Amino acid sequence: MLTAVILCHEFDNWYSWFFRLSDMLALESDFFNSPPKKTVRFGGTVTEVLLKYKKGETNDLELLKNQLSDPDIRDDQIINWLLEFRSSVMYLTKDFEQLINIILRLPWLNRSQRVVEEYLAFLGNLVSAQTVFLRPCLSMIASHFVPPQVIIKEGGIDVSDSDDEDDNLPAIFDTCHRALQIITRYVPSTPWFLMPILVEKFPFVRKSKRTLECYVHNLLRISLYFPTLRREILELVIEKLLKLDVSVSRQDIEDAEEKAAQTCGGTDTTEGLFNMDEDEDIDPEKKADQEQPNQMAHPTAERLDVLLCLLLSYIEDVCRVHGKIDNNKTKDLYRDLISIFDKLLLPTHASCHVQFFMFFLFSFKLGFAEAFLEHLWKKLQDPNNPAIIRQAAANYIGSFLARAKFIPLITVKTCLDLLVNWLHMYLTNQDSGTKAFCDVALHGPFYSACQAVFYTVVFRHKQLL
Figure 1: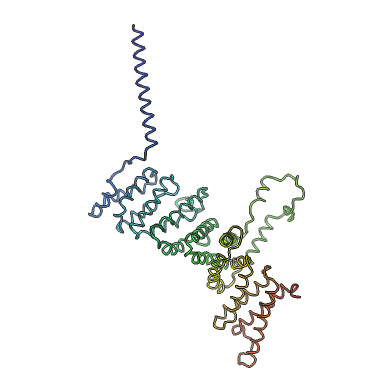
Figure 2 (figure 1 turned 180 degrees about the horizontal axis):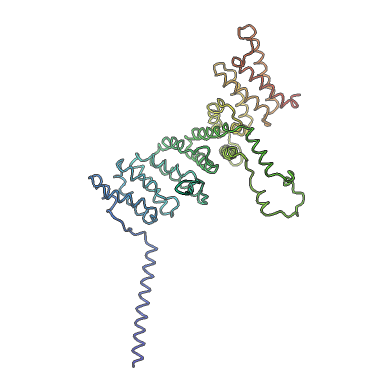
């Protein structure tokens, strides 16, 4: 009898424990399948806090700002805050600029997808209800077009400011471009406000090549869905490329390359050019080094090289559709680039590399190369143009005819005929005048045209004879 009582008691204990465990599992399942609950906080709802501030009560607002500034803020907290802000967006007037700035500084891009979607929805609601905050929102998005910086401190002093190698960067950039397009749906004039911000946020040209590459890539991507900004974006990119180009001479670049070759030398310079023995074992580390893309020894030249590659790839992608050159798209791009060429490249002295983006475009179809030559010819002939512009036009004619292999001989001969006839007419007109004496300042275009003829003949003489 005693044994039966004990067994019944143990069964009751096991039975109650089993149901407690079932209840716990059910609660856990409900937790994971339910939306985030309201988190513990102080100060009331966002709407109440905003209305209190309007009445002069600022304590709750300061408390709210402190909670939003918490570096350990969790995803569920951000989602709950954003939901409340969206429902209170009509109260977020200019008086709450500091609060909005704190929200725009929230670390939302590396969060869960729910946080990202909720934040994008908040941005759309905010700019549609309070357009006064359009510029800060655009500025926040543009600031994420470069890799985040890893700052290392020693003794309270920043000793390193390097790029964070984040594998998630492409996804972050995609989200930023989504944000711009969402904002534009609510505020169609967004591109007009965006361009000055893109100019302001452009990294200093001495920043790392990775930072510059990311920013320029994102700028060019913006031009694809905001075509009204394309000319301005291309002008900004080419202006920065020119600053890099003229900041270092060709001789400095060549000296750096030669020094790097000597430093890495000591072995047979022909080694690695041709692998004659297919069965030859190669050291894995050496093989990895050989597979790495070549880099310029001079840091400025490397930055310039990377950015020019980006620009050339962009031109290729815009002009070539399904493997064929689209004439209409190429014409539109040509008009944009030729205006930038006239504004930036023609007046710039000592540019050695940037102008080749134009020559790359002309290689697609002879008609564009001939249009460019005609454009330069008109610049040279026009006495109303400044002498420096006419001289630059003559220099470009000479270098283009001499160096561009895709220019046929008949075009070279036609241009030389025009130049030589113009030179003879110029001499004839000066014979009876009072300015018939050697003066580079006075006859600069004439001397430049002479140089163009001589330069072309030197490089093309075998074909011309």
